[in-house]
Image (cartoon, rainbow, N blue to C red):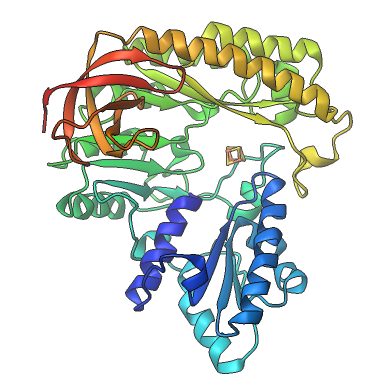
Length: 428
Ligand code: SF4
């Protein structure tokens, strides 16, 4: 969601005549778009602001703006800690940035906006997409859940869903502009529509995507296991554009820990749902999130997580070391796990998942898959990289495969985090 907001900020500034500067040293304006998910984000923000203070001494015309979740959380505190900041704005005030910069010039004083609700749905703003053929599309913002480790409800507020017609019109316009793949974004996509009259359903939204000519792929993130319905599974199974990949956050394999996290499901229910999803969509790849070292996590609890990870055989996992987030209920829970214990458990989990990811990827060798080419490979510029419908990263020899093209690829090698392949033909 934050990356999507960054694209909106870039698009908004470009529509006001700004152009992207080649380096921060040449920029007239630097916008820091912040994240509040992890504690380290605080240190990084104030570290970056310290460096910018020095630049500003040399170039007093430099303007500095701070936005995002950390700005929403700290509010005026950002300007108190870094009085050389010119504009600060929260998650609901993205659209106000140009106005704040104008106000700063008029008054000579820092301008800020930390409103608690957006008046304009962010999608009404222009966006500068990272790739012309892929786009994020927000279906809702905010979250009505209260997971005890999460700062999102505090910095993004309760769920506000967008009218389905708006979403579909935006996707049609994106496709007309060359987009072939969209990723629907929401903190909890499964509850999409609950807050709207007529209660449109996420499954209905997925079904509507097939009617959009030219759209080749659709993904979504993230679904909360608690709200995952059979209807969504059926919609995924019956759709030609919805990809065979799901990000399905586990967080922990221990029921007592899940209860303290306030996740509203247990490991048994999670595994049951996973089985049903795999039955409904054969060959679906599954990625997950796991937090290690949540307060009170015992060796036994962690053993349960390892057991579930072993049994679930995820294709990949985002693994996180729990760190205290001020302002969340978990921050004041007793029995915080010592950092060295968390680090040791984290290493064991990563080892296990790397082995499973490699095994899963090895199953792909020799198969022919559809790959959407994303651009030059970061590892080897002589090769290109793209993603399968199952969201696996593939590196292959370029052979006439420009970014944005769908090609058929034969998988020739497997690694824990990517596949090797050779082109096997053009699909579209
Ligand atoms: S569902 Fe996701 S966004 Fe909402 S509180 Fe839980 S972790 Fe945070």
